[in-house]
Every structure is written in C-alpha cells, then in structure tokens.
Image 1 (tube, rainbow, N blue to C red):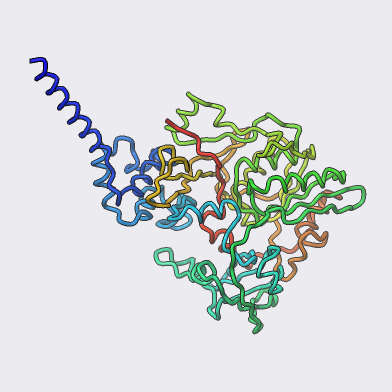
Image 2: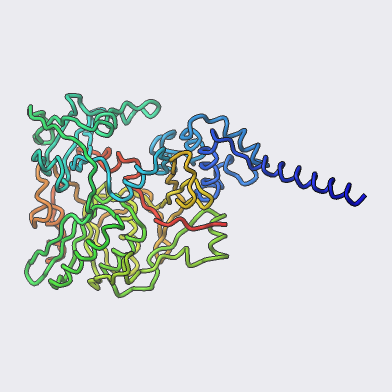
Length: 491
C-alpha cells in the first residue's frame, strides 16, 4: 500500500512538473516576441497605458504565446505595444517618439558609443516655408580623419540633391508621407552630394558635386576647446557633440585645460549635441560647477511598477547626484562657476537638455540660440536574458531594444519641457553667414561674448524662412537618445 502511494505521488509530481514546464515553454520562433513583451511589460514607461502590456492580460505563457503568434514581424509587435508611436501617429499626436527595436545589437551599441558607418559630414536638413516638401542639407561640421575631410567638405556647404535626386519630404501628407531622405543619405554607403549656393534666401544649384564614402568611424565628441580673451574676461569655449562615456577622460582633460588657463566664463556649445549617457551629463554638470557635489542633479520617474520597487528596495536608485569623479574614478576638473552660457539649436536634445535643466536650480544658465528638441525621457538597452542584461544572453538571435523607461526632473521637480527649452536670446543660424566654429566672429559665439562682456544682445537678424526637418544624427534611429548605461534590476 505504501509503495502504491509513493508511485501515485511520484506520477503526480512528474505530471505537475511537466505541466509547469509546458506553461513556461516558448517556441523558438516566438522567443524574440516573448522578449519584447516581457521587457516592455516590466520596464516600459507607459506600461500602464497599454492594455496588451497589462500584468493580467494573459493568464499563462500559453495564452501569451497565442497572442505573440499573431505577429510574424517582431517590429510590428514592438510598434503595437508602444504608446502612440511616431511610426503610426503624426508628430503632433505621437507620444512615444523615440523607442527603438534593433535586429542586431552590435549596431545599437555602436551608435550609443559614437561609432557608426559615417563619411564624417555632420549635416542638418531644412525646408523653406512655401516650398512644399523641398529639402536642402547644410554641413554643420566635419569629423577629423574622415572621407569628408579628404574631399575638402567644409562647414557651410549646401546640397540640394543626392545622386542627382532632389531631397524631398512631404510634411503635409501625414497618411502617406513621401520621403527619400533615408533612402538617399541613410542607406547608401557611397553617394554624391549636389551642391548649391545660398542666394538671398534661395538655394541655387551651382553645378558642383562631391562623392562621399562611409566607413566605420568613431567620433570624439570633444570637438573644440579654446580660450578667448576679451577685455578682462577669459572666456572658455567648448564644443561638445555627444555624451559618450568612453570619452569622459577627454572631456575632463578639456576642463582641466580651461581651468589651468584661469577662465572666468564658459560658453558650452551644445547646438549639435543630441544626447547620450545620463551619467556623463551629471559629470559634465559637475565639471562646470563643483561646489554642489553630493546634491541632487536629477530625479528619475519610472512606471508605477518599477517606481514602487525602487522606493521599497533601493530609493537611491531614483536620485542622480552631482558626482566628484568620472566613470573611471578620476577626479573631476571643476570650474566652480556660478554662470554658464549654453549655445543651443533645434538639434539640442535629451542629455544636453538634462544638463541645462539640472543646473537651473543652482546657477545662472544663459541659453543662446534656438529652442531645443524637448526630449525629457530616457531609455535603457534591453537584451534577451533573464536579467535583460547581456549576461546569459539568448544566442539564438541578436535583437535588442531601447525603450523609453523614465522621465527626469531637476531638483525642483521641473521636467515638463516637451516643447523644448526656450532660449534667453533667440538666434537662428544664418546660412549666408555661418562663420567658423570657435572664432569670436561666429554669430552664436559672438552673441555669447557680447552677453558676457557687456550684458547686451547681439541684435542679429532673425532668419525664419527655413524650418528644421532632420539631421545626420537623427537618421541613426537613436541619435537623440538619453540613456542609463546600466539596467537597474527589478525582481
């Protein structure tokens, strides 16, 4: 009788174990979709607003599998689970403008580190009021040791076509926008830019062209550092084009250089800086100041599930403090300033805006240039693994995603700048007079120098005939990202 009972108990345990394994079973063809759903269910900022991401949406794995099976393309599932994504809603109605799924995380990692397939020509794209869809490009700066340098591409060059095809984007057709920008500039490894002249507000083809070829290129974001003396002022100028943590030593060295020369003021040029590491943003803020170490730089706000977990288990995870060291432990070179002048444009985004907003409660931040992008949300990189990190990663595919997971406010709880940060002095760049970066006559830098030395304004004419479209960084999908480099564990 005892043996019979043991056999029955053993069969029951085996059956229960098999049933449990079956309930957790994910077919290989659904593993990418399963990763997408579970990662977004746990971390996505708007998880509570998406019915198909609700914790009680599926009773077990089998029900989830049946749902996932309805999406043969992982990106279709990803877009479906987002909160009014830009891929499905016009710009004015979209809520999630930045979450991205990658089929190969190597490409994602490269972009986050500043390493891309690049010909070295950093450009902006504009269209003229009244010219329906006609777009032109303008060179903002050129990377060292690049094909663009070798081909004598310089700041201020204009191009109206690529491979003889005029650039075009119909912003008025929200249902079916016609756009050849990515096809011509994003996907082509080699292309010809057809040049034009700026002629009293008109973009006039001049018959010249340049062939450019992309290669794997790493961008040091510390583009230009110098000191300009004007009267009794020693003005430090730093053009910084991306918050890439592996270049923090170079950034810190630049501040050491400015400090050793005894600068009295700083002009921080972020007009072409579309973002990057949240941690690096905090370190830059400490380089500018230094007298606020250990105080609150930013406050993170996650979805309700994650926020509750952090509040209960690790509340310090939600607070970013002014640090005293960079990522490798090296002491920060601080200028201890009480005022900073920041140059901005319609390409200034995310981590750049975070620096401006995070410093506002502490020092006088004078913003000169154009209104910023308005990206007050940040992301993390999620891999298909038990912890969503790269540890024990699923080797059957290389998908990874960069979903929006948090908002950041400053010490005073301000973080609602979705329409951009407004400048103290509005100046739009003039394509007939762009100037040389770092020279005191360059219009935006000149405006900052006047502000520093006299307190006055430059009274430059406003060129409102052109509107921003995209730029070379935004064509990289996460070119305007602000992100945490470490995925916080939620159990």
